[in-house]
Image (tube, rainbow, N blue to C red; front, top):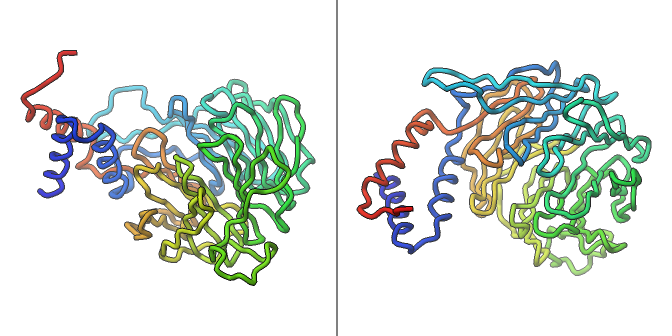
Length: 393
């Protein structure tokens, strides 16, 4: 009753203009994300013969799920049902197209081009970065033999006016590739070991973070020849430390991601620790997260919700641990896979989580049955009927 009254109070405050409309939306979205369970309404057609390494949903329509697998293939599933849903029906998202043997070895990273489902990029353990035409499912261009070994991660900025693709590989120098010219424009010199993960800032098109096996996270302005800073887990309190001995974790850093506002950066490492960094101050926030199991020698693909719903979904063995990012509290552990979970992805528009595992499954997590679409619609109608005033437009 208290939760229902709280939501009703927020609804009335919005109607009176005391709160901006986003407050009610943020509260509902956060509540739903905290109560995720395995979906009883949607499942992904199993097509891979090996583990799932990477997932990406196009941010234009939010309809197509792109996945890369250890079986060297790339798959695209349609997430929207073409017919009317019944209450008892489970929608199996069908495979719409695939690229067999897209790479010679495991496909590590897949990404749609920003706001365009007509093309996507892939990279893998064969050391190649490819740009694909979705209509023909054929590569348009192949950056081959330029990265000195396996490519662990690549990323393209979602807000940039430039088209540069950042690449993290077995060499200790991340590279920036220009699809227009087909060249690797320049290298970022700083890391001393393999670079596992990188992330573009969603607030600054020239800001890039990289992380690697040398236990360090670098922040770069790609217009400059040197890094802006190295994130220090001790916040500079160990005065005797030189710049070469600064570390961000006590083990390899194999996963980083900005929150949607660009103010915070999340990292995970083989020391089984999660850290939250303030990008403006370059400081460790020192939030204490419970330990996770992380012994991967490649990128760990966790998922962060936006700043208004600061929730982290982190793979940990065969489960997904759910954390409140700003308190460090562990909210839940999602268990359904039979193999090691390798990737988590939150849908950009819906309150859904997708997890991929070595058991070949992609599992959909959403709100429980009592939060079904019909129930949500009835709740909204009931709340609207409680108000005596209504707009005429």
